[in-house]
Image 1: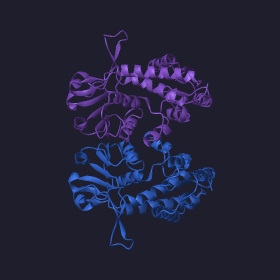
Image 2: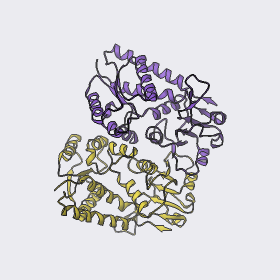
Image 3: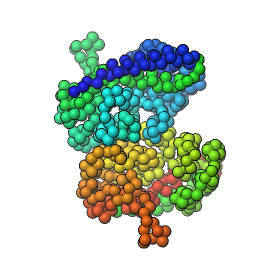
Image 4: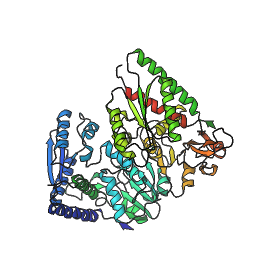
Amino acid sequence: MIIIDGKKVAAELKSDIRDEVIRRTSLGLKQPHLAAILVGNDGGSETYVAAKVKDCHEVGFQSTLIRFTDNVSESDLLGAVNQLNQDPSVDGFIVQLPLPRHINENKIIEAIDPSKDVDGFHPVNIGRMALGLPSFLPATPSGIQQLIDYYHIETSGRHCVIIGRSNIVGTPLSILLSRKSIPGNCTVTLCHSSTHGLKELCLQADIIVAALGKPGFLTGDMVKTGAVVIDVGTTRIPSAATKSGWKLSGDVDFNEVSPKCSYITPVPGGVGPMTRIVLLQNTLKAAGDKKQ
Amino acid sequence: MIIIDGKKVAAELKSDIRDEVIRRTSLGLKQPHLAAILVGNDGGSETYVAAKVKDCHEVGFQSTLIRFTDNVSESDLLGAVNQLNQDPSVDGFIVQLPLPRHINENKIIEAIDPSKDVDGFHPVNIGRMALGLPSFLPATPSGIQQLIDYYHIETSGRHCVIIGRSNIVGTPLSILLSRKSIPGNCTVTLCHSSTHGLKELCLQADIIVAALGKPGFLTGDMVKTGAVVIDVGTTRIPSAATKSGWKLSGDVDFNEVSPKCSYITPVPGGVGPMTRIVLLQNTLKAAGDKKQ
């Protein structure tokens, strides 16, 4: 059984990005610039955005953080999105989700210029992905694909069962892994809360992706020997062992499942570190070969 | 075993559309207007477009057919698309596929204003469908969904195996039937040419959609008793029994499979007639409540 080291892979890819920025600069190309819009003071969102800003700094990107209070109007937020769309110095930007309830998230996402949508959440990017056209891929699905690729895990013709059909993980990953590409070309079964016989389906799977947000959901009796298990869960559960008082828990019962696997991602240190890398990769791609 | 009568359902829906056009007219709303661009003289394309024009006539839509010869340049075709995008009298339009090889089909499709893309092929419409947002649905997947709905076939939580991952049938249908909507909310397995153990997967399916374009591919030993079988195949095969010298063949061995089914679509007269209806429905939707 091999534990997939997402931290190590992410560090290597990050180093590649840093090298690429240096190479770009030496050629007189533009320093990539990622902007983020953060609304309110949600603890999780603050942490994620701070990490993204830190990542930018570390790889040599320019970064801009635009903050709004919780009571920002939808039209002011749309105004900020339009300004970033127009700003030639900004290559890509994200609007950190979730947004306050009085704001229509889909309306905000659809207002983003697809060519700057480095989160890959805009319908154009999802649609282009589904059609096999070049696009910005959403972070988690692309991060999983890159981990599979790094470890040379065979996917073609193999049966992949995905548990969870969210718009940011399960659904786009099912599309991505079904396509005739490497890694990919899987037979994908997309499961969810209404699925009957989930255990029997999982027992047939060569690859299982657990992305439903229920700590320890995938147990040993649901996994066949030799399966590849990818754990996307990141639920905070109380813990006496940490200073913060909580720890991250995956959707997989690691102790039970890992002995049966050929490969498994841990939580933390598996898929998580990869998602931040994809955002940097997408921003680099958005910068393209623009001159300084 | 019930044979799904696509011809009958399509006729009823067509009659509904005709009634709706009369109602619109009485309210002073605009007559829906569908335009089609046809390039070259391909026999199949000629037939399809002629049928669409006839449909428009029958339901009281205005229709416009724009023809180009095989050697039209990509830029001239893009020009025609832009003209239709700008023309306020045209509510929706299609570019009949396939196009000659020297023209980039994706480029043409992406040039269509998504709000007039009544074929539902534009990435924005595919992406919005994947995200569960309102969109123009592609004809065959939507037609299948409506047949399922008409016959009150239970789909929620049921296992649907789709054979074939084309951009116009298998892939969008897998997305559509996976979503939490009725009909839908299925556990979907998307199979294709690289799938291993296809027979075993099919034998587990409550619903099988055969959309691979291989006459008679799905045989009786691949189907469990009581399954719903949807046949999307429409391959022309030589026939001594018809005037034309050919007949349509589905992907299902109807004689073997039908006795095992709870419901099955025949070819012809199953899914086929529905696809033309969806185009009319989408055009009606595109016309919205525009005034005369």
